[in-house]
Image 1 (tube, rainbow, N blue to C red):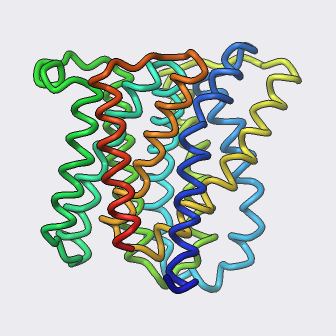
Image 2 (image 1 turned 90 degrees about the vertical axis):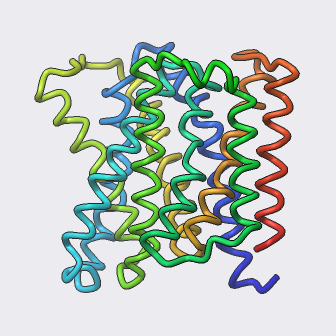
Image 3 (image 1 turned 90 degrees about the horizontal axis):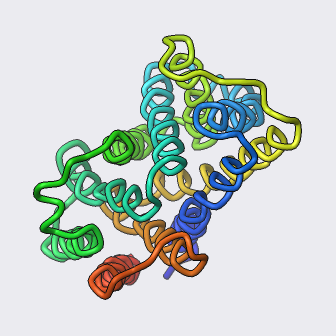
Length: 284
């Protein structure tokens, strides 16, 4: 595989590991008394401020595309807020499975909005990934599932993340760093809006807990840049399928560390999702 094609693939794989393990620092922060909107505000506020000088330096390159950066800030910001809240308060496996319905959104969105080819192989790979997710969640339960608010946030996060990825892919004239910065800056702004509307309250955290949230913000900067670099240089459908490795990482880490357990059916789902991701990676 040429190096030009390999680098975006490796970037996505690395970001998948980082986002798949994101539940660990979030749950650790929750034990220190800091979670929810407060984590979002501090962590993503830190990440956004770190990226702000780069965004300003590239202003000549994105000045004509302000509306697209605003759309990325809204979609990406909502995706980050929804993911953080869902994974902080919900069950790791359940939230990740519902979030990773995004391969369907990615393949269909790439076909509808970007004119990407929906080959038979791509469709079969997508179905295999979704079939694995169905096995993990339980196909019978999924049909009559009563979704709680964490579940809706996970689904909404997947939709918003897919839309954000499509914009990253479509607006090639905008620098990757500027698009990543807009996504990160949009997150604390939305979080502050939620607090201003009285939907969730915040309190002053202890210095050690706030420091942990800042460190998580640095984690977010690296993971976001890696995933958006890959998103910009690969097809939306391929991105959606490769990124489901996050699901595998999250589930396996949760099981190995005792935060969750896997039945034989759920283990078969993990294997099917992994097989779909490997098949797509080989196709790249």
